[in-house]
Length: 92
Image 1 (cartoon, rainbow, N blue to C red):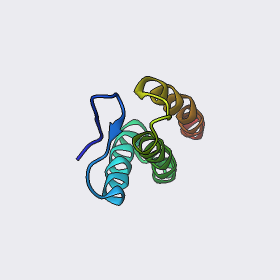
Image 2 (cartoon, helix red, strand yellow):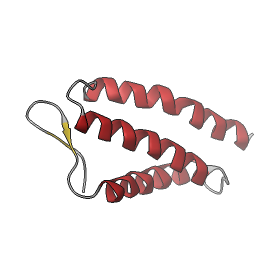
Image 3 (spheres, rainbow, N blue to C red):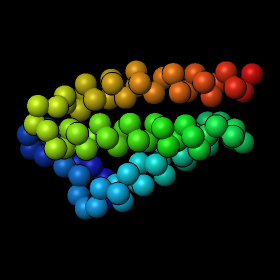
Image 4 (cartoon, rainbow, N blue to C red):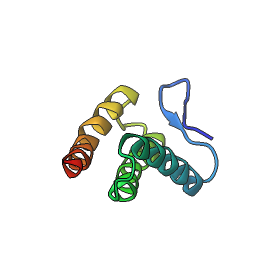
């Protein structure tokens, strides 16, 4: 299951939204655990980041006035950067 773009450039998220949120959480957890192995903050960071990403994607899918994929990607990167910096600082 994954988000897809419709012909108009809007996102379409098939199926159950809770399953989609879990899918995004699993991806975030996997990526963060690989980048910060053994870090106790990974689970909190994964939930925080995945919640933001999921909601931005769902907002985009539900709202034709929402930003497009490129702008959403820029938002995600800007908003996620402080979380990654926190994990990096915790590593020492």
